[in-house]
Image 1 (spheres, rainbow, N blue to C red):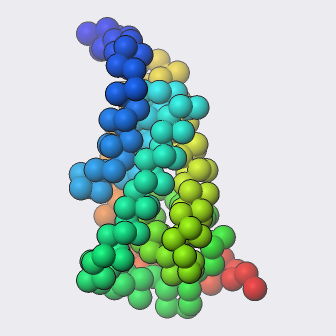
Image 2: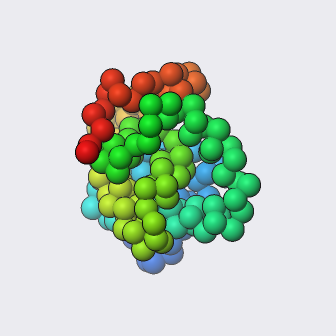
Length: 194
């Protein structure tokens, strides 16, 4: 049954034409409402579309998510109060540089929208924000999507074991990791660029 399903999914994706990529990009846009980590959605893209197309669709989806966040933040400044509190906890030693933000985009448990807020603080125009948001999601999209492709290449038993392990890591350990993030001293891990 599972073998039949794993063979049927790629056929269904191919037959759906442009609809499958559009739905996947929309999946990126509703991801925050479902409380799913970015890495999970990118892995689904790698599983469904392969590394190349999955990465492209993830870059588009994540960039659109950053743009939507920008306009929501500008339209509803009170929306940012939650992120401002997180920002104060995280940045006791001073603001992050753009290079640090780009590196943190690769960390699976770094809060995606908090990093978008940092990009907003470091940029002065929407065009500059969109550029750095786009550049900042390319590498994580490729890396995370590669995990999804790797799951396909493994035998079924190992794929299931890996998925179960990753599910425990994503959903079980995530809360503890987020709580510990507020205690990180950035100065110990990154040198501020001058």
